[in-house]
Image (cartoon, rainbow, N blue to C red; front, side, top):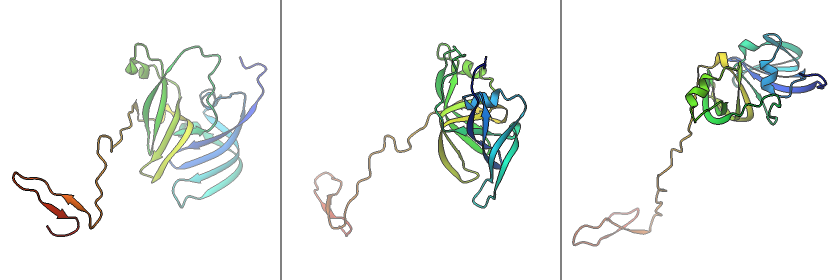
Length: 205
């Protein structure tokens, strides 16, 4: 299947519940999810590794190489275009979803086999070890880690607490802009039958 494919070096960023691990791996796979899902062992050896603890006081360590336990990985990020796998002919539908992988949450497009628009059935058929979320945003309120974006976040399915449809709501939608009145300007007071009164903004009536 992979005969004739030249190995390439792919940079990865792996998040655990305690660490951010950056490094590179030499592989015949071109997609991050394939690197993780088709790993020959539950471990991945990275080169030129940087390990950082979460939080502003987290210590950073640089290593020439390190073996990473994939079961400890919450998700991996990559900022390379996600190319379709030519060996996969199944058409999937992108649905907006949110994934909880404490202490993080990830929102973006999850790609499902959706027949007749049945998202519930598509979630039942989602069985990959690492699930790709494209056009993703990830953050952690508990770690005070603000929202960051990535072209792809590969979420460890076994570590996810839930995957659910997601619709982002604008809290200001439907609200009219507040009226700003400068001091010294004159605005009309609410009318009552038989009266027409003006008040001075910033002063007494």
